[in-house]
Length: 255
Image 1: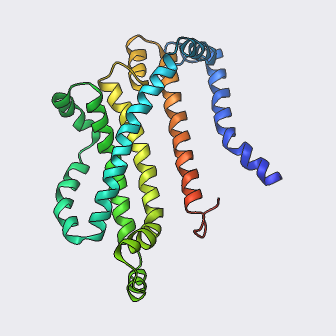
Image 2: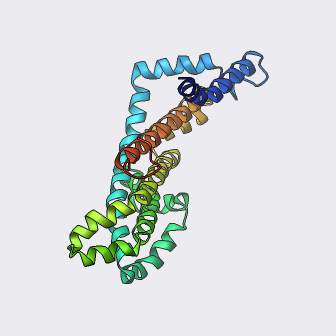
Image 3: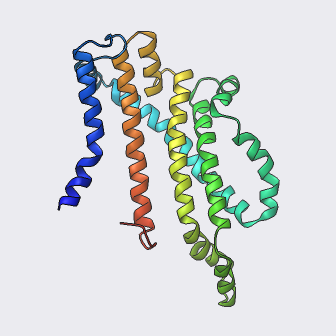
């Protein structure tokens, strides 16, 4: 009981301390309100944004863009990852171009993608896709290549079909690495949508932060950043929960 209580309380200690320091600093006016708004000002703005639908609209716009790009990245990342992990020739064929594209930061792609596709939804989805694709691809390849050779030998001796080997042997063995890629890809997709909205957008949490900067509204900026962090942590917690459920059969994985 005591350990459970400690596990429940411990994660909220640091956030609580940060809020207390924030309250103290703003009440004593050590820093101007134009730089750091008071918690009360932020709370009032949140109430206003919830009331007029601004917060819900911005959150939905950012999430919908992110999910489109992320699911495309999952689809193509898994396909290319499996093919490149299983077949050396395919790996050699794609590896050079993929590595060249991968090492170019997402921010460097934004200007040329906007030039080609404008500032509409397509450009944002492409930026998100690019950011999430490579973590998923590389971890899928690593997972496939890391399957013990003995599994293949035993399957061959037992006369198991290639299709069954893929879905009953290779995928289960590669799942831990694949989930690492999904987790990293999800985080990268969320950061990418915010970066894209900061540069070219007329809606979303990133756009709201930019608007807050342009209008000298630090409370709006803090709300945008807080929502980004909250949603990011929630998504990471969700995918970790799914991982524990799917891989509950593995030693060391707690359900």
